[in-house]
Image (cartoon, rainbow, N blue to C red; front, side, top):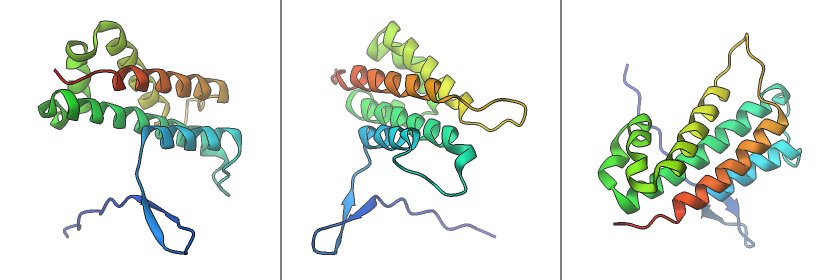
Length: 147
């Protein structure tokens, strides 16, 4: 049995005249959605126990989107490599300190985003800290120019 590829369409929002317009996916929107979920501005019925992992997944996606944009500007060939390989060459593009921060943040978000029955979920203060860190890392990555 073969599976058909999943179509990745941008999210849509209703316009003033009732039509829908594409809503581009950005790092800021993903971080905002995580913050809204964390603050309770967005609630998902039946998902009360997974809110922290949902926030973590949104934050990780925001960080990965920033990395994808960095590679498209600076070194497009690296954008096709696995994420771990991208993180290994990141110091050559952004410097050792920012690369270390991004790698540690990506690792923490990856770890926190996986369910383990023996581990506690991330606390709201941990998620808030990661959200700030993703914002800082996004700013640092966005400042990098193509060679």
